Image 1 (cartoon, one colour):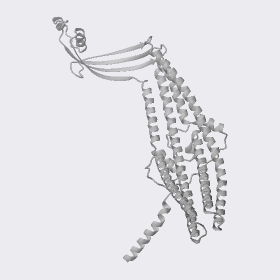
Image 2 (image 1 turned 90 degrees about the vertical axis):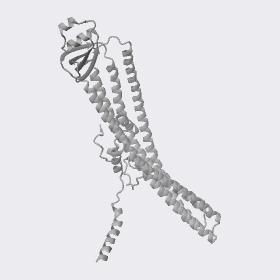
Image 3 (image 1 turned 180 degrees about the horizontal axis):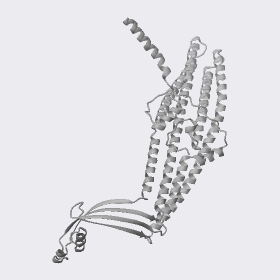
Image 4 (image 1 turned 180 degrees about the vertical axis):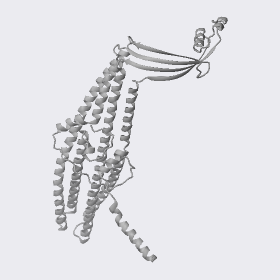
Length: 458
């Protein structure tokens, strides 16, 4: 009975071992992007900036409300006027004692003052409303930067994902080429043994095989580095190695370049963030230049006086209305206003330069798409021709009509044609990614990714 149980357990183990690979799932581009959106540090940093900008909104809004201060002060003095005043405030003034003492040389007096002060601005020349408007604009800029950081992360992940697949295909091409070369070396050795070719041709084939071994080592290293780059973009351990699912089909780029350029200027999130910052900068001149407008406020004060801390033997209160106008500030105020105006002018030029830069980025990406498409079409035809040429050369070599060098040249031509086709195909994909990114088109929507709720879609 025990023997049967052991056999049964061994069978289960074997079956489980064979079935394990079926549970191993390939990493899709969508999954890689979703992981990056959750773990990427650049997004976390931008998200923190959004929270900081919202806190500054609250800070600016707080200036509309009263400011309440509680102060505790101690005064030790033998100044006649102060001793007289503080004695009154403590409500310990004795008229008889006052006339019997030397009022010009009073004893020193200890006074503890507890003060509650409330300050309410009524009108400050529009500064508060302007600062609130600036804070709103800067918060909007931070949100746009967060959205751009998300799109940049998606672009980086998609690029790294494609590079891993390209490196894997590159390794496959080199591996197959190396296997073909090894087979030809073995064939050459056989023919040399039989006297059909000389040993020099075998040596040529062996030299070529050694070169292929070097290319194989380099290709393996590049594939490993591509995996690490993908892990870095995803925000995970760089030693993670996963099998990747093929890329989804990319839409064809049919719209004219001018349409893509206009889309970039209208939709780039980082550009919109700079525009909002520029609007906030334009308001700075208004914020620092009240234009001889008054500042009006109310100050309410309630005080406790005693000869001990927090004592309340004497108490009083007062309310003051305060109004002031800056008539002359030594030129510093006008200089500050001029500096704000020039800063805004500088910002206008920077935003205009940014817009032109976006147009150039989009134009460059569009040209890369068109170039890659044409190169891929040409490379595909070249691969077909190189495959046929290698087939003919192999046949002629076996018939003794071609030398080994001719066969090796045909191998080289096929390998180079396959690599050109591979590079052109992935260049087309990567340049399409770049065109979508530089034009401000949502990559998360393109890849069907569920984005974080904080992403701004406007």
